[in-house]
Length: 278
Length: 354
Image 1 (cartoon, rainbow over the protein chains, first blue to last red):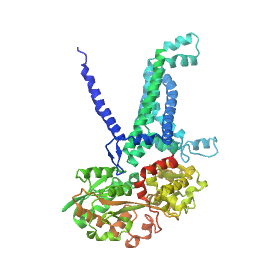
Image 2 (image 1 turned 180 degrees about the horizontal axis):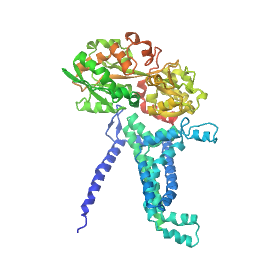
Image 3 (image 1 turned 120 degrees about the vertical axis):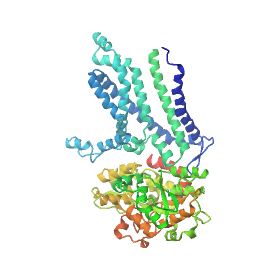
Image 4 (image 1 turned 90 degrees about the horizontal axis):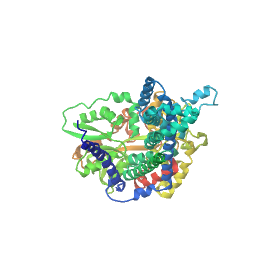
C-alpha cells in the first residue's frame, strides 16, 4: 500500500494560511491605519497607535496581564502535576471518570464560571457565611472582586488544560524508574522531585505555556472578578474595539500582547531545550 | 447596549409574548432600526401596529447591533448607496458623529408639524439650521440604593464621596456611559460648564478620583450590578431609573433617587440615512413618534421617559414618576466626547479606573 501522498499535508497549511495568516494580516494593516472618529478607519500607514501604547500606563497594564497569567499558570501546574501523578496510579475506571469530569468543565462558559465564583465569594451568599457560622471569622465578608478571585477563576479554567497536557506523559512514565530510585535508597519525595519531575520537565513546561497563553486572552473574568486595577490588557482591547470603536488602537494593542506572549513562550521553550542538551 | 439586553431579561414575560407585526395591505414599507432585544420587541408589539393602522405604512423592524457598530455599518453602506435601515434610533455620540460626517438626511420640518412639541434639545439640526433628527426615547440614570442597607434614601450625589460608603459603590466603567464627569461637575463645581476645557476636565477627574476607595465595582455588565444591588452585595451606585423602579415594584429591596443636583438624562434619537429612498415615509414616522400620546404610550409600555413636556401627556403621577421626574436633569455634554473622546478615555483609564 502506498503511503499517504505528501500533498495532503498542504491542505491544513492552506487552511492555516487562509484562516490564520489572512486575518492576522488584516489586523496588522488595521493597526497602522488612520483612525476615523466617525467610527471606522482609513487605510494608511502611521505608527501613532503603537506610540500611544508605549506609556507608563499601558506598561503597568501589560505587567498586570503577564503577572496574572504567569501566576495562574504556575498555580495550575503546581496543583495539576501531583494530581495527575496521583490520578495515573488509580484504576482505569477512576481515571476515565476523573478525566470526563475535567473535560466537562471545559464546556462551561467564562460567564457562568465568573458569576458562580462571584456568588461563591460574595458577602451575602458566599463561603464566608460558612466560615462565620463555624466561628472562624467575626462577620461575613466579600472575597470578590479581588486579585485572589480573579486568579482563582483563571485557575478554574486553566487547571483542566494543565491536567490534559500532563496526563499522557505521566501515564506513560515507567513506574520502574521510581521503584529503581526507591530501591537505591531515595525517599518518596526525593524520588518524586529528583526523578519524576525532571523526567517530565518538557510536559510541565508545555502545560505552563498552554495555561499562560490561554489565560492571557481572558477579558471577561477580570471584569467579573477583578478590581479595576486588575483589568488585563484584553479588557482594554475590548474597550477600545467595542466601546470606543478605535479598531486601529485595539489592533496595535493585540499585536503587542501577541509579541509579548510569543517572547515568553520562546523563553520557556528555550529553557526546556537547554535541559535536553545538558 | 447592554441596557437593552438587561431590560430583555427583566421583562422577559412581556418580550416572549411579543407578536410579529400583522401583515396588512399597505402602500409602502419603511425599515426602522432599534436596539435588538427588549426595545425592538416592545416597539414591534406596542408601537408599530398602530402606526401602520394610522398611516398605511408597513414597518420592517431591524435589530441594530450594540455600540457604535451600527454607525459604521450605516456609513459604509451609505457610501455604496445602500440603507440597511431608513430610520434608525441612535445614541447621542454616534448621532453627533453622523452629523459631523453628514450621514443623516435633511428632513423637511414643514411636513412634520408635531415635532414642534419637542424641546429644542430634542430637535437636531445641522449648522445651517436644517432638521435631521429628533429625540426618540429618553431615560434617567439615578442614584440607587438597597433599602435594607440604607433605610434612609440619600438626597445628594455627595453620597458617592462619603467615607462611610467605603467599598460599597457600583459605577459604570466608561466616561461615555456613566456620565460621572457631568455628575461630579454638577455636584462640586456648580454645573457642567467646567467640562468645556481640558484643564476643567482634569480638575473634575481629580475630584472624581476621590471616590475610588468607595467603588467596589466598575461595571460594564448591567446584570451584574443589578443582581449585586438587589442582594445588598453592592448596596449603592448609579443605575437606570426605569429598571430600578421596575425591580422595586416587583418587591426587590431597591430604590431609585433623583438627587438634589439632578439625575442624568440620556436619550436616543431618530435619524434617517442619507442613502434612504423613503424620506417621505421617514418624516411621517418621526412626526408620528413625536406625538404626546405616542410618547405616553411608550412610557407605559416600554418604560422610557417622554421626550415632550409632561403637561402635554395624559400620564398619571404614578406613571410619570416611574419613568421620569419634574426636577431639572443633568444633561450630558456629548460634544466633549466627540471632540476629545480619545483624550478623555485615556485620562479616564489612568485616573479613574486605573
